[in-house]
Image: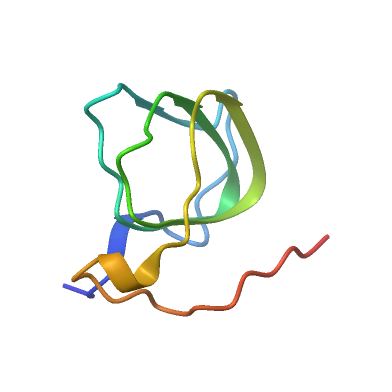
Length: 88
């Protein structure tokens, strides 16, 4: 178990349509890192209650009222890193 890791996918996993879909509701809390380095992640819904969420993926689509927050100080779960980076 790795602190701060919420969801993990094998880095060698093939990217198949439609990729990975993570759908939240207004009660959803996703505090942690979502690690899907070789596949597409679609992050949808109304997940506004999380202190922080980190998404590492080949490609990312965020839609609906989904929030990717970075309030690390308010969470007892330590993030793997505190640096936000966009890589193309």
